[in-house]
Structure formats: C-alpha cells, structure tokens
Length: 300
Ligand code: ADP
Ligand code: MG
Image (cartoon, rainbow, N blue to C red; front, side):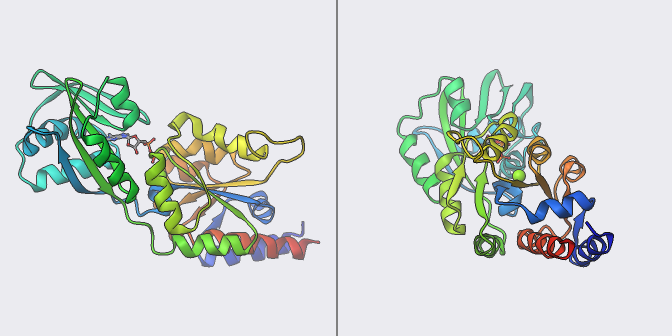
C-alpha cells in the first residue's frame, strides 16, 4: 500500500465529509460485497411522527394517550418521543408512571393510576398476554403502508394501536441503486416488524430484509452474512459493511468488515465505526466504496 494513494483517498473522502479513521478502513471499502443498512435513522430520517391512533371499541382516545404518554415520557426511544409529542400536541393531561421498565427491542411498561400499561411491538403484546381482537386487522393494514405499529395495552387488554411514520431520506433509493450498479448486495436490518420493513425496502429497491431483530442479535446477523448466509457452504464468505446510527448498532458496526456510522448518529456508533459519514447522506456510502476501489487500484 503506497502512503500517497492512502493520503489521496483519505483527502478525497474528507472533502465530502467521508471520514476514514485509518488506512485499513480505506482498504476495507474496496473489498465490500454486501452493505447492510439499519432502517431507522439511516435509510429513514429518524424523525418519527404519529399518524394514526386507532382505539379499541369503547375506549377513549385521549384517556389511552394519557396513560401511554406517561410511560413513554420516561423512555428515551425515538418512537416514545413521537408518542409524547402527539399527546402533548392534543393537550392530553399528564399522569405519573411508576415502576417504569424499558424492555429493549420490545417497548416499555409502567404502572399508571394503578393500571399496568404496556406500549411496544407485537412481541411485547404477546408477553403481556394481549389479544388484539378486532384491532389485529387494522394493525396489518397500517404496517402494510410502511408505518411502524405500536400496541398499547392496559391491564393486558388491547387499548389502541398507534401508527408512526418515519420518512425515507431523500437519497436512500438512489444510494441503493448506485450500490447495485457497483455490484454490491444491499440488505436492510431492523428491529421493526417484517411488514413495515418490507414495504419501505420495496420503496427503496432493497431485496433482502432482516426484520424483528433484537438489539443484541444484530452483530450475530452480520456474522451470519459474513459466513455467506444461514446455510452457507465452506468458503462462501462475504465482506460485509454495516451502516448504522444507533447505540444498538455499535456491536454490529464492530462485527462488520467495515463499520460505517451516520454523522448525525449516537457517539457510540461514531466511536465504533471505521468510517463516518459527516453529512448523514446514504449516497456517501457508494461514494466511499468508489474512493476505496480507486485507492486500491493505485496501490497495485
Ligand atoms: P430499531 O432496530 O428500529 O432501532 P428497536 O430495537 O429499538 O428498533 O425497537 C424495535 C421495536 O420495538 C420498535 O419498532 C417498536 O415497535 C418497539 N419499541 C421499542 N421501544 C419502544 C417504545 N419505547 N415505545 C414503543 N415501541 C417501542
Ligand atoms: Mg437506527
């Protein structure tokens, strides 16, 4: 590896806000075969907004929102912030939540006015023994539109489903197309539910979706892709890059052959990554790969 080629590549990147942490990072970009992208905050803007609140028959909407917002006020999850903003925007009165518990990859629970309130995904609802009843169909409809669906239950009874939208970044689809034209496979990795993820992936032209992944499982999914898939033959290994923004993404960024952090992401992600995209633009992923390939050519 000639130091000059490395300097040129690093400099080219820096001008676009593509920060290679070291020479090895630059070299690794040249051999990437699969790019795994986190959905929320990477392919999407990470600015979730409540679009729908569908209550169970006989349930008052503002009363459910009062209970749910009390729980979510204590959570740091971006979805929780969206729910709180929505409740506050409607002028829903506040309530106190006790025994708050954050359940990673599931949601949150607490006791409000003596009632156990749970807010989260299908997995959390199942743990709470919630039967969605007539809301099940509405949940599926919402998910099919690409909304993230959050289930609110009170004392294990389904109270409402909340649809939350998070728009794709303007350049996500183009970034995917450019990666494909570079001969690179693109995979979406997310903790969100399968139907929601599938819809957004379809909009962006992504073939492979790995959804409903628990925060602690993301790194193992990367390792599986590095081996060439769940049923890979010996020697089918692939060079995998992971692009992420969240605290949850850090172990996966470390596991990948190349960890890429979104500049607007969390400090942990940025510290763990080999490469940081200062402009938080997915288009800078194919740009980085092209710089890496150009640099490698000059080194031979
Ligand atoms: P991601 O990989 O998209 O960052 P997480 O692992 O943080 O997702 O969460 C996975 C899913 O768990 C979310 O899509 C949501 O359905 C649910 N969830 C997690 N935390 C909360 C919360 N505080 N309120 C509502 N839903 C939550
Ligand atoms: Mg994310």
